Image (tube, rainbow, N blue to C red; front, side, top):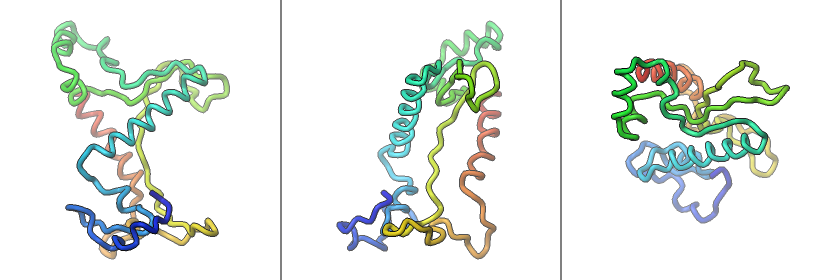
Length: 171
């Protein structure tokens, strides 16, 4: 992804499976297409694991996918109900941050003491770049504003959804 591949030149412009996306020169459309095989989760987990390893290397106390983070606030009945859930049910029905860290080194941008929850999100570049010069050539076709709607950055759209997701799971 992101580099011109001469082997796919004859595929450029073809539709990508059951999506409205078409194969482009640099693979940007393929990078955002939702395809079977859990490709998004695989890429997400690879990035999450690398951040986890980097944190450990830097001496940060860091954990991946911490289940039961809020169980200390449950009633005894609530804690009993939680313990009966399967791992899959816990994933769906509770707040499970990708990473939880503490013990941040002096000078860290994280100034709040205590545990910090982190969610890993992948963001695609909205700019296309000239591979020879490296200069921007403007918006990728996937991100150009549609004539009938205002431009909204994908990251901003995703950020707005996070509080609602946590709120729904916290109920």
